[in-house]
Each structure stands twice: as C-alpha cells, then as structure tokens.
Image (cartoon, rainbow, N blue to C red):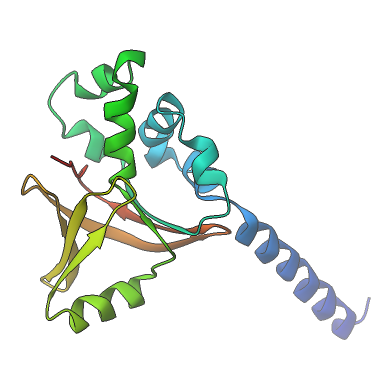
Length: 170
C-alpha cells in the first residue's frame, strides 16, 4: 500500500468514526460514561430515555454520580421508586433546555445578559447561569449552585455539559 493510499484510507476511517459518534444520542453518550450511571438509571425510572433519544435538539446539564451522592442519604433511592416518577421527571427535565447551546454560546449569552442569564428549562422552571472565577455556574430555584465541569459533549441530538451538583426546582 502506498503512503498516499494509506493516508486516504486513514482519512476515510476517521470520517466514518466521526460520523458514527455524531449520530449518538444524548442517552447513548450518558450510557457510555461510567460517571453517569445514576443519571441513566434515573432517566429509565422516569421514562425519559425515548425523549432524550428523539431529534431534539437538547442541551443537558448532566450531573455525575458524585453529584447525586451529594443529595441527602436515601434521596436517590426514594426518587427511583415508581410512585415518585413524576417528581423524578420534574427534577430531570429541570436539567434540560430545548436547543443546542455550546459552551461558547452560553458564555456569549451570559455576557450579553450582563452577567446573569435566565435559562428556561424543559420542566418550565428557570435556572440562572452566571460566571464565577471563570467558570459557568448554575443557580437553581432553591439557591443551590452547580458548576459546569466539562462542556460540549456533542451528540447527534444536542449537547451535554457535565455538572458537579444536582440542581433542584421548587
């Protein structure tokens, strides 16, 4: 095989891999992350998997397992019970915004809003995005604060930003 043909083959393989990754849904990416198994279990319990596999686009602020572990003891187990499905769905949809908002677009919007940006979530409630020490923080309706710790995990139906604390609606 010539060097030119090898390079062309490599570019073709890279294009196929990129194309396949771009087609993964938000749920596929979460399922593939060892740090988001609690989120995946919650999405299943709330029957939100099919929603987050749909066309979207969605921007998801995805709490890590460690973020869920910060909740009071027993909270996650209680929320995963069938009788708490509606409450769990409200909490999870509070972490979702309709549209595809990259880190750059969020930063610009915060700047354009003079430092504090109100984000309407799919649950119908608002999150407040602002900057602190150069990082985007989210303030929930109860005054709780979460920091975005990883950004722009692209999916075929939106984008994920990883957060370090579960945000809670009223």
